[in-house]
Image 1 (cartoon, rainbow, N blue to C red):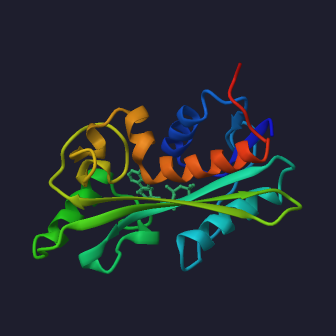
Image 2 (spheres, rainbow, N blue to C red; image 1 turned 90 degrees about the vertical axis):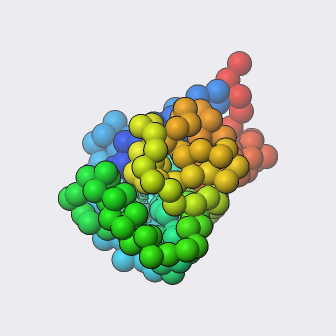
Amino acid sequence: MKYLLLATNNLNKVKEMQSFFKDYDITLLSLKDVNIISNPEENGTSFKENAFIKARDVALKTTYPVLSDDSGLMIHALNGFPGIYSSRFMLGKSYQEKCEAILEMMKAQEDKSASFICNLCLMNVKDEPLYFEGRHDGKIVPLDGKGGFGYDPIFYSNEKKMTFAKLPMEEKNLISHRGRALKSLITYLENNKFLGKKR
Ligand code: ITT
């Protein structure tokens, strides 16, 4: 596999994925690179269903293999909210405002535990889609850190003992939900001889 088309409009996802694949002999393309517009209605009921919806919409418009990412923050005390609505919650507001709103909701909650989930869907025009999932457990804390994107400033990693917003991208990639899903994707591609390290 020489090319992989990223079926996402989120440039932060593109950046993280590009950094993840940098040592491999593969060229990642963005939707902009191939002039494809894709905004399907994400009406699935799970990350996996929405990942499929996004991958299929693009796969029908190209012959490149396509990779989509549906991900989000699940807060256990809020029954998994914002979950698949992570991006649509308070649409149009800044992430600073969204994070503050989440912190407000969490004031009354004793259990601060939360997980980031990522579901990747790899697809092309002819084969069955393949899925790769990653998860990272942590808790919701007051805003801390300027790096990353989205809910990173309020997500404290149990493993790293700091928020995702305090981690350089390469470090976040090693352990994040997206990094873990990408790691299983890469293992699959390597095992099937679709991918190797750059020489
Ligand atoms: P595409 O559908 O075009 O890929 P999107 O951002 O709308 O872009 P999602 O529907 O998968 O994608 O929503 C994911 C949201 O979950 C994202 O916008 C963030 O709010 C949050 N999120 C996912 N991964 C994150 C991460 O690594 N750090 C912080 N927030 C994250």
